[in-house]
Length: 87
Image (cartoon, rainbow, N blue to C red):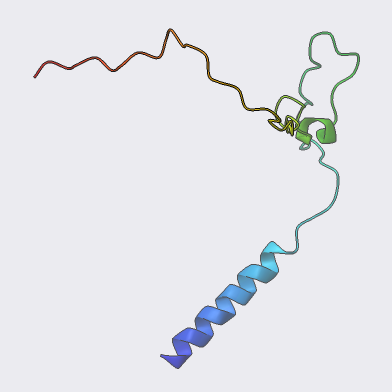
């Protein structure tokens, strides 16, 4: 049992070591492959950093507006009771 525990810990340490040694070089196309086409209306092709950065629509800012005054809820004409299902 102790050998299995030590083997498991060794395997986990090896996996952690291998995942921590990733490259930090800029992305380049594979030899013989072309870069993606330039989008319509763009002057230049986007770089890898441009493609990996999320847009404003993908990561919108939070609205931190607080409710300062409570108000009575108005009549909602679409707030209807559920229909009865036939048995």
